[in-house]
Length: 184
Image (cartoon, rainbow, N blue to C red; front, side, top):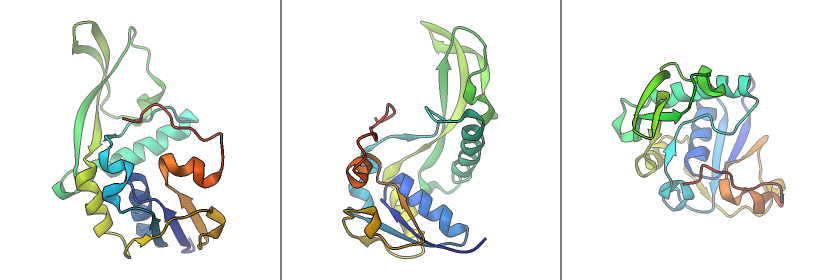
């Protein structure tokens, strides 16, 4: 693999995580952000892992399983702000959901909810952004670059990765980009 100059735009959970993973893979990474991590949407959002509304399912399950393992590996570092929580996907039958392959501990059975007696029980990593964001920023290979990006074409790098979340639509001038369910 040839190391590349990569610019990540955005310093929320996704931007910082992307930058850390790329740096760990040997790339020269710079994060450009209009606002410090504590002022991003991530700082006030909930963050829980789940392979939700993505595809194609076979590839998404591989990506999700790998991502889940990476988050779970941070649990012992309490400063990272990652723990595991129990979740349930309620269902009337035991037919396996498409995402089951990404979760090694999912089990069919009763739930604690009287109106929804059965479902898939699993554990998922939960990220506390107030802890994770400063933890991740401290591990970046270089300080954040504070700048407002108006056009992706103006950003330097062999690759530019847009991790601006809800700002992606305006930055790309792409009306097809819309926020999905999952925003808390």
